Image (cartoon, rainbow, N blue to C red; front, side, top):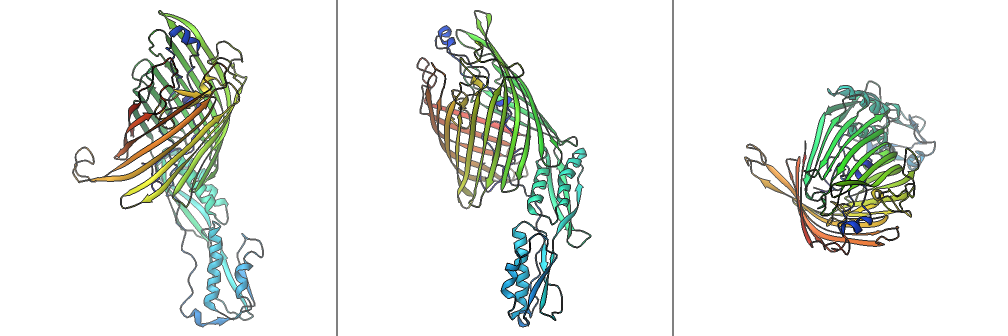
Length: 588
């Protein structure tokens, strides 16, 4: 379900897309048309590791509550009066001279009740806490005012020590590298505390509960982090959104190993299949932390093979992808998050034509690409979340890259030293919440721009589960593209009685979260290569239902109406107007 008020569980909210998973297998060019008489297969691509729409980053609940604030004025304080000639603020180091005077000036030189002096202390403390110094307390100490000078004391609170509890193994050392950063800031600021608590909880497989307790020194607090670790996790997904050339039924299986060492690493294996020899792809992904400020190293390696069964000619496509990148969380907080990354991707593909059981070379493509970008999300006060990303890609002549003009490139006239820019922004907005119901709208806008003729695996792909849902991924592609989607969601739950077999177990009751939705999407692409279709439009609308079972299994059924049915070309058979898609996802 997608509700702004309910935070979905996402382990890696800012994971850099693994280019090996998003890259495409070499496209067969128009030359194949003359041989196959309109038997041109679609542009094929390796599957995404985490199929489906991008998840809204969750808001962890691991931030400890602030301690109680200033004591209120004692009984009778409004009956005792004083005329302060000055107010001396002791222990304040955060603000430059004069800043706090704005809060004390209204009572200086006036005859005021002592309760007003307590109120001044409360206003000073409120300023500290509004600026994030959530452990700071301000109070009016017991004193004898003889010369008219009133003292207000500030205790700028700090975290003196961190205690890590829980039998989580060597990953506790990485947790300490994060959490010990909080002891360096005096006074403690919520911005720093949030950052390092959330970075700790971002470690693969790790969950945490944090509590504060009084320290040994005045103003000090001790933070206790109670850690738990899930050593293994996995995902299994089956759907029917594949191409008819490589198999409409497709499955993805992911298994991951989490945080066995002090690197807080994750090793993940992914296998995608169309349940026959037509398309199979496997990939290994690795990530680990470097240091104590959130920097991550990520790497991947994947290989795949595609053997689509066409009527006149077949082809045998092979794909190898690899890459390495660094990601740094510039901002990590409950409300705003910003990551930047840079990396290198390697792509190799070759496709052989098979005619009358005879195989011959058709394309050979090697690419080296530098990528830079950022991901961000912002949770505002209007019951909504905005999240998106931006990417810059530059092809380079390195590590055996195919040269421009090579006749075996996977697209005629493609430039291996291309430059492109692509990005996406999404907004999930809560509209209405009632008794057991909520209404949301999810809007998405995405696009890509390049002035070059891109290799076919670098083109913008329309289709799949997000933008262009009436089409399979890559059925419509372009060097430049604009795509948008609007989805209206109605969320509710259906209660079931205790003892319902097969749902909650023989002695459990509860509810099944459900979501009904309708959508419309619109995509338009442009191609820079002469001789190709200059532009295409792909529009669709539809609706469906999503159901969550026991928080680990999700079912989805969607009916889609295609508005543009000739996207495969004039010589190809028109697409059916309607299609029915199903998806089952299980997490463990």
